[in-house]
Image (cartoon, rainbow, N blue to C red; front, side, top):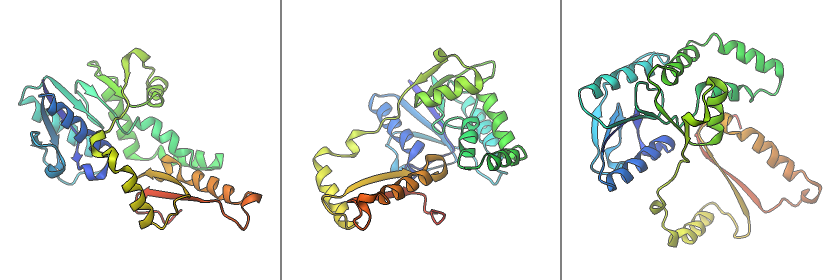
Length: 261
């Protein structure tokens, strides 16, 4: 099959969706499918050989118009070629398959409001959001993606995201396909696991009997770093650990801007 991916920036070193696209492309190429990527930026060295790249012109555009411009140029570029399947991973429309790796904008807005402990603060934040031009732009784009006459096949990576579609856009479960995000197991050779574990613990000064909790995320607010830190503090404050902290270490890996925490 001739398969086209649309994503603005395919840089696997950033992780997340970009890594998933690289792994999916690698598997499709191994199965002898033809893979095309339409993007503004990509790291060809970090992507499997054999992909055919199509550059989407990049220039400065206001944030609230940026996805509209990219989606329009993707459709124009793809119209000049013939693909069996076209697939988008973010704010694109008019494709055969949409796999929103970042979930729904409407759901993210609601979840982000929960970072405010006070109900009054949540209401004020919601009111401020209603004046955000980017918010209205993304909401309109999302409706164009999923509620257009030509409905795409929608793939989601969890039952939570499936429920978001059902709640916000009243979609029937049969229109949503849950496919868990997988990894390429060959990236992590099993025979090197203990060696890597010991090397990393020695590098960070972690004892062999310490329990290590790993938190990996880029959006600390959305992924819940704040309540995790409060829970860790409560663990250390338990009577049996006063003056004798438990053999526990919390490692946070992700966005470098962590001063607020």
